[in-house]
Image (tube, rainbow, N blue to C red):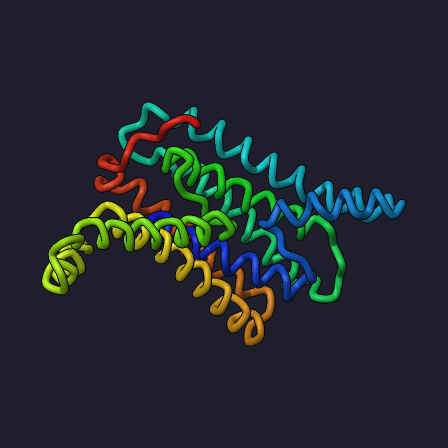
Length: 239
């Protein structure tokens, strides 16, 4: 549930950021590519601008790592501080943009990228580097790999048993490890897409105040992490 909600947060922030300031703030591959392209064309100011997004994302990842290391021994709330800092950062971005709707302020981009860096590091640590939520390239790749594994698992199990064996293996598929991993990654992609859809819809209607939605989700996760149920959350693993 944590990673699915965070994927929806990333999707909404990424989409809101695109419609508000004209760029995606969680895609460091694209931003690094922009740095290189601008340098090659001698566009130093644009290269520096793209580079500051990468630096902001990096600082966010470092912040989350420090906060989670400090909270490592807590029985509950191990992720609360990182989630709270992300929520406060996005809230500050939304409030500033709401009061200055026509200003082209680069700190809005920096704040969004910083928040996404926090989130990506948080999920990376929690999942042991298995899951990412701020970009879907790896997730879609994993879905493709896992779909082939699922088909191979069904084929190998049904070999020599005809149609009846094939149907039996298909019925067993929901309990297979390959299906569980595929379901997780399909859920991540779906949650990200829902965030990318819901964020702009709210932005078109409410403007920068739409940032309240991802902030609300993050605050809900803080409350859940601080609750007694948070004491049973998986221990954060370093990566």
